[in-house]
Image 1 (tube, rainbow, N blue to C red):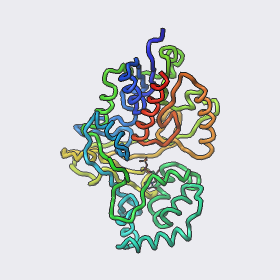
Image 2: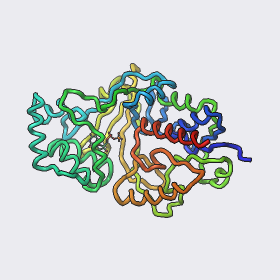
Image 3: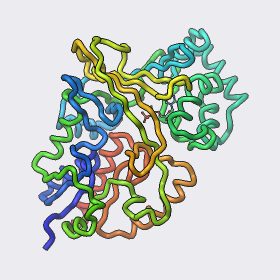
Image 4: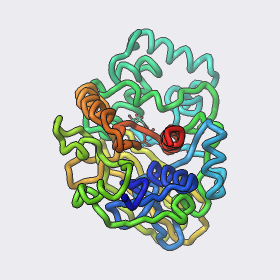
Length: 369
Ligand code: UDP
């Protein structure tokens, strides 16, 4: 007789949603996580009353009313709208690429003027079917925006030439001919009041969780504990790297408490040239409109991934994707292991997509009961 219906490896968003739904369906779940806390990368640390996004800035956004209602069960959301500023060669620009940015670049005041410049640049530099990030960016916004706001940031962020990166990455960013600095096109957006831990605590309420527990140190023991395993870690590690290592991008965060009220006037400032080794500085209090006398800032340095470091981003170029497909084929043969989340699916998921995918997998499980 197995002790649990589901052993869930990883207490991040995917694992927590899965555990919550299964517990609600009457199933016995155990969640383990090698870190000392729950929440995966959405975890926030309270530093002198400020919720510090420990593993990078997380801004919740979705177009789905269903997903929005889902997260709102666990926390109230504020009306934060992400409007990052970018600094390139000493000049400041609004993001995403919009009429403010075009004015700052060229002095254009009317959409037709900006459009004319961009279209002539696309005509000159763009490609019919862009094959990499550089070609995609040139085909989307032209040469000036690419060279000022995309190329260096991207190469710093990914540690690869923009010509070696997949095109889809840059399609995440809107291009608009309105004076609208909202980084996302989605209908719903905000930061949970009280931080993301509130959502995770709500999801995992009543679920057995063990933190500081490394699945791989005792894999066979854990596999024996439950009828099914939900694995949210790195898929290549699960298969002992038998087809070789997948590549990831890591990050290093350098946080500082400052005895001043307002350091940079915005939650996110990107550094888009190579003068600074970091890609952005986050000032966490601005996510929640904090009024404290002090502030906490975090510089985000992209780094090569090694097995001792945290894997933040999959690098979905062709070579890695081909390797991943081999792992995926193995995973499809499994009858009692479910793979989910950014690392197990080797996919550049956002939070709302993780929740949707977890709910989808739960639905399938319940249908199979
Ligand atoms: N990007 C860029 N300039 C910017 C911001 C983003 O070129 O100022 C590109 C870069 O390639 C980055 C991608 O757009 O990896 C996606 O950016 P996003 O802000 O969505 O990334 P995340 O917050 O997930 O790191």
